[in-house]
Image (cartoon, rainbow, N blue to C red; front, side, top):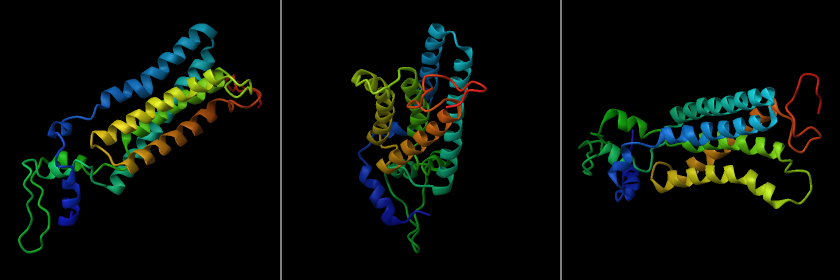
Length: 221
């Protein structure tokens, strides 16, 4: 149950636009985190004609985003941290309501909106972004040999670019009052860690001798 003190703290965001409660752009996240990397995988396949590489790239990407999604939802349900915009989820008319004796908060908003308001930590959009685009960064690092010690800054910029897009998604979640900065930070770490594990399950480390190849049967690092 929420306490009046917590409600007062959350109400400091009362200047937000209530239309922010209507939707959170989940469909666009599938494009950023899944469809965009797949298009890049397909483009590399057209050039290299390596079906084995394409298969591993898509499979690793799907593992990354799905595992991250399961972990994120499990943590959200376990933690139950209120979102920054929870005040208007609880009191759509902006008028707080408490029990007379216990001063316990009485939410009179839509039950589904209130339930969704308890899923702030960690940020699902951020974790998905780093899971998909983080995997893409690993993939590109291997394909363009970013760790060849050639001093090519352009290669490093290409690898960092997907991570920058993922970071901007996290910043937008804070700016739109859907998440606290801690939610975004934790979501980013979670997605990137899962992406790293999934990539290394299907491909050699980009800095290794065979960093540009897929792990074929019988190929050792």
